[in-house]
Image 1 (cartoon, rainbow over the protein chains, first blue to last red):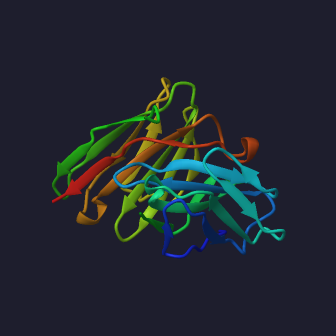
Image 2: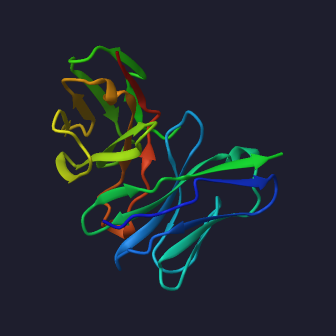
Image 3: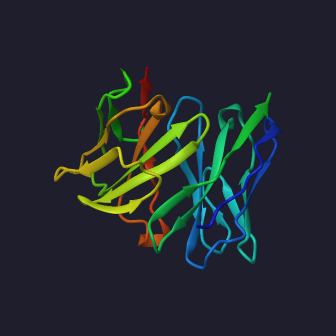
Length: 110
Length: 117
């Protein structure tokens, strides 16, 4: 099964951009890369997903390496509300199995 | 509010007992997923149902079982409970199976906190 690896924790100053990396060197051709985040005392919430091309939405941007072995979630201006655990997930479209990475705990410093 | 509801919010029980956790998906969602989150294991996928049928299994113990009913709500049954089963149990729902459009966005409920004493 393809797995992801992420740094355990990261810090960012408020209103500065944040780049959260994820490695998935064993990704297969049909795996989509999803990002979720979990705020304290809440269930995870969807952030963004992509396959090969970079993706943007109102919450964040997703930059995917050309070889797809890594990706980066970009928060353009971190706010205190962005302090959460960020999970990088591979969705195996062929088997419908969901494998969560260890997650990165993001702290935002005022 | 994700639109996914889970009951009960908290559950305290003893070892050896059996409990049932309930999940109501968002209106229109056909897939339901169950996850377990404990301090030492992180967020673990347990099982997925789509329109009443089991679609995928993760790290679900044999003591655990689940089903999805015709009205699409789902129940997770945990039996012969052990201290190590204490965890947060999340339910999530999505429109359809993951193979559609690269994986549908999952909407998570607030979770059920299970404490086994």
